Length: 259
Length: 304
Image (cartoon, rainbow over the protein chains, first blue to last red):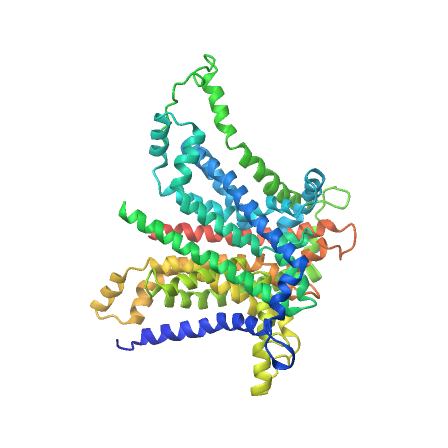
């Protein structure tokens, strides 16, 4: 293959920007494995599991990731399905409400949520899991877009009509017809939500809940090694989730092509 | 429009009172969307309304414009100007470099490993990085970072000769490009995929060079998408908080960090509503950027 000018430029761009993004990641690996006197050790990495508060915070974040994705799916799937089938006039409104969090910075939202959470504490206790309500707002735009494209890809009206004609209840239509047909979209919405919740810092830190990123930031003030190790770990974990997602999307594309 | 689905006659479903039936069913149809509306109303609209209304209230709840007037002065105005400057600069840097990276990726195989890795990596850095990004930069160019030590020990260059710039505005600019470039890749790659190879072949067939192609075909077609992405990147940087909060613990050079001061009680009592006015200011700036984005998007959609 001839070395075209275009090929050379492309290689240069990829190498330079590739280095720009890889060097900090390598630096994190290097920094987190520094021992005394220029040796290498894994103290920072084993420090992750030795810190009970950090382990606790990781567990809180994992639970929040699960509850937030579940809440947003339970709220959006029936609503969006129903609006498409029976209340098309509401479609603009639902879309506007779901995309609204994009225009309201999280730092602003937290100003308004602080008084609200005094009430949430009062009624539900001050469990960090109450952050689920705030996080479902944050993931709303991502989940909406994923589910909307999932619903647009199937012939919802015909499917629902057929199921209803065969005597299925609306609940059965939702769970046994709609959900299986948009499962890739639901998986996408859930994976995005999980990644977003695991990385969230603004709301948790300002409402004083101890989540993964809040703890990472706190540890960073006394032991940079451990917090850099956890940071790298959480970036790699989010990367793995989104990498998996790219294959899930690919499979749906292939299946559509066959149909 | 979707054709209404015929109700299935069953023993349970066959009992609407004559005359009241359709009205009653219409009311039931709305019931399905109530949980969603109640949730969004409580956790999205109510907090937002609280901020917007609070911006116009004094400490006793009376109407006032003092909070907004305060924003046009001194430290608050400075913070807004710096925030706009930081967002505009990193949006421009991110858009240009991100467009180059998108182009380099789009030239590869559509389902290839390079593309999957870059897209997944972009998603992580653009949306979920937050605090980890701050630590990535401490590990790289912090006082004891890998690059700092390499430059000091092997080339005799001191990165911090000019002061602790990493923890100030220049540092924020550098770190922000680390999530701006990936966001550009996410939003710009689909636009590049819209370029047909036939257009390039047509230009080459007519004797045009690569420059002719970009000048007369590729550039104009991509311009709306590029401008839209620029606005989106601006809003993104303007809204960002986590990375800056983890990096800058002293002082509040930008608006989000000033709002932090109000929430953590570092500011005089009785001035809480000034924090809400700052919030209103941020919403206005972001809403203007997103509104322009929507306009550009619509124009782009027409062109396709």
